[in-house]
Structure formats: structure tokens, C-alpha cells
Length: 405
Image (cartoon, rainbow, N blue to C red; front, side, top):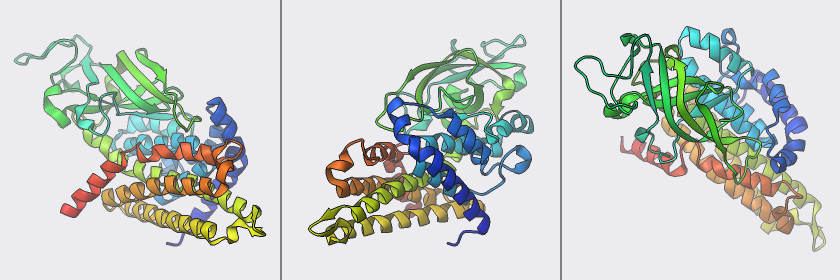
């Protein structure tokens, strides 16, 4: 696939920024667990917060292939920073673009796309990983004389644990209770899309999606996770303790939350795949540079077949992953289904990236294992790409189902 001149210009601009502002600071941010707000301001100025958002809504008005290019370059500079940008672009912006109403787009999407706000996505719960249909967080409609009690002819347990209610019945706010786990930007974000149960008896059709400002009373950052890697990105447990939000913050209609959540994951998987390639590319570049410089038995170790062939395999696998990503992104840009292709891209790219990072460490030997060189950090950062936005096993299930027809 050949990139357009505009796509190359965007990629090169983000690459220049990432190599000048992210890469030299990534090790320090990692050690200090620092969220680099100044760097995010620079990325916002480049338009990285709203790549696919239309210009009239504050975004760059570009496509998903360009988003993949941007995320690869940011990840090549710093993996944690790329995760923050990825989540805001997709699923958060993508959900608002597709399901948000005009008022929601004006109030939330525009500042998100311009980098004035940072988005979070609250789906996973402590007891729920891949099984998104088993959520327990609830949202109950109340207000204007409407209480949590059931309408005439209906029964519903107290405490917001069941029963279907809707805005048509006169409520003016929702009360959210529950716990969300492993939330990227849960602390540093400004607004979260929260998937909660509005009708406990309806299964997947009983979930709804909401916009929740992180400043809302009852939105509680209970814990910041101490992670293996990606220390420049916060990952939080969020407690919703009688968190009140206006009824107008419901995205779409009640009962549409499950589809909204899964619809945002498709583009997100393309983004995670692109991140994987970016981190793996940086690891390979470090390994190649070291192999060309390091002398052994009278020549650069790059010239030894054991090393040279290892790096050649890495380069080939990396390029194959990139092409899978570009193919999936192009299908999405053309408005064609790409669930299988996005799953393939994420599965292959995330598993490839760990192997490439491991091979890069092997190339440096003992130096690859110590923090004086960046490879151990990249290796830690890239490992989560096989987990979030759907584990590798989930991607295989999706691909398997596509084969079954």
C-alpha cells in the first residue's frame, strides 16, 4: 500500500515531535511514573487528539490509516503516551462521533478532539474481563419527582439493582454505582464513557452508555495500579459512589450500551496494533544500531549470521504486522466490515512485538537487560498490548467465528 503525500506529511511531523520530545524523556517518565502533560499539549497542537474527528467538530478530519500512522510514531517515542492518545481517539471519540447527539458532540467531542480534554473508557470491572455482558455497575434514573421506585405495574428491587427505566418517564439524572478496573487515564482524564446496567433482567440489552465528567461527585479514583510498564500512563480503579449525572449524558438510548462499547473496540484494536508496531520498531532500531557498532571476533556482530538473520526476521515480521494494520484501517475508512481484519492485526502485531523486543534484548546481551539501555523498558511497555482492547485469545475467538461463517 502506498501512502498519500498528506499521510506521509502527517506521519513525518508526528515522528519529528516524538523523536525530539518523547523518546529522550521516556526513560525518566518511566522511572518517575510521570504523566507528561507538556508533551500532551504538543501532541494536541499537532492534532493527535482528534485525528478522525471532522474539522467542523474540532478534529483533523483525517482517516483511520492516518491514525494508525500517528499512533505508531507516538509509540515509537513512548508507549504509555501512545496509549493515552489511542484511548481518546478510539474508543472515546469514535463512540461520540457515531452515537453522540449534536449537543454531546458540541460539549464533549470538540474539546476532546482539540486536546482540551482527555478521555477515558470505563468498561472492565474487577470480576469482568473479556465477558463484557456480566457487568454489575448500575445506573438508575431519578429526579423531577421520579424516584427509584417502579412505575405502576412494575416491580424492581431497591438500591438500583434492576428494572428498566427511561428518560421518557420524567427523570432528570442518573445515579451510577459500581466499580471499574484497569481504566486508562482514569485519574488524568476529564470525561469518561461509562457502560452501566440500566435493566438487570435484560442481559446484553440492559446496558447503557453514559458520559461522566471525572469531576462529578461520586467519581472516585480508588487506586492507581502499580504496573509492569507504561508508567507514563495512569491505570486506575474507579469507584462510582452514588455518582449523579444529568439524564442528557446518556449516549444513544437505554439498552444500546453493549453495542456501543463493542463498536468502539474495532478501531481501538487497530490502534493497539499500531502501538505494538511502533514500540517494536524502536526496539529493532536500537538493536540494529548496537549490532553495527559492537565488535566481536574482528567484525561488527551485525555481520555474524546468527545476529543478522535474527534481525532480518524481526524486520520481516514487523513489516507484515504493519501491512495487516494498514489493510484493516483501509477497510474501515472505506466503510466496510473489518472486525476480523482488526482482530488479525491486533493479534499478530501484539505477539510479534513481544518477540521482536525479546530478540532485540538478546542482541544486546547483558546490556539489553539493564535500564542503561531502553530495551527493557520497551519490553515492559509492549507486553500489555496482548491484553487490553481484547486479549489475544479473544482475537482468536473472533477470527475463529469468522471462519465458521
